[in-house]
Length: 89
Image (cartoon, rainbow, N blue to C red):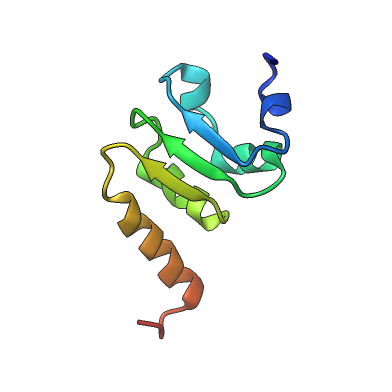
C-alpha cells in the first residue's frame, strides 16, 4: 500500500476511478499513462471522466469502460476512425 499515486500506478495494468475526489477529477490521461508506464485499462465507476478525457485515453492506446456510459463506444470508434484516416469507412 502506498499514498503516492505515482508509486501506485507504476507498472499497473488498470486504474479504477471509484471516488469523485478532486485529486482524481483533475488527473490528466497523459499523466496517468506516464505514471503507469504503458497504456492501461481504465474503469470509470461514477462518471469521473468527461468525454474529452475518455477520448484522450483511447488516443493513448488505453481501453476505457464506464458504468452507465454506453456512449463510450462511440468515442472509441471516433478515435479509431481518426487513426485510420479520412478514407477508411
